[in-house]
Image (cartoon, rainbow, N blue to C red; front, side, top):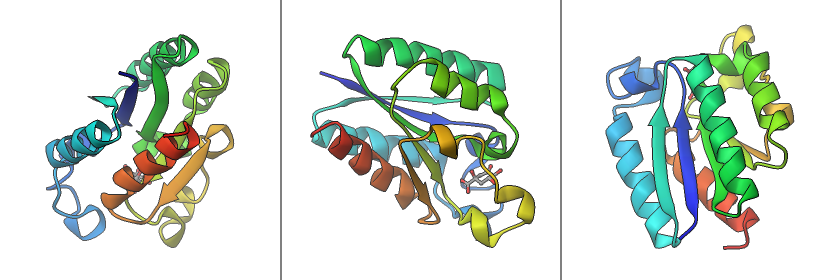
Length: 151
Ligand code: DQA
């Protein structure tokens, strides 16, 4: 069974209690359970990983790039959190591993928010982008990624 990675960056471990007017009341555990169930429905094994540390996210992208190259993974649904707007290292990691399909996902509509959230270092390296659908965006991103994989 092929794998799919749900990757969440800084502060997304606080989902459910963090600024609920912006991010809702669904917890990260809820999101991961939904993602795992939806992946199983598509015949995929989900792996879920969250880190507040940029290097840990870089390492996970490298690892998944190797799995993709080996035909063991279909790619990544990735909410990079605030690193979206700051991280050349994550941009380079995605580009560096080759063709790994990464669907950049944001719970909120970042374009409706502060100007510093309007630029993404991830978007030029992403295979697709889902923005502003709340935590439902993770499911939409997974469906899009699976479609790109021919599922
Ligand atoms: C976010 C948007 C980012 O600007 C913010 O720093 C986050 C969450 C979102 O999902 O809407 O941490 O990626």
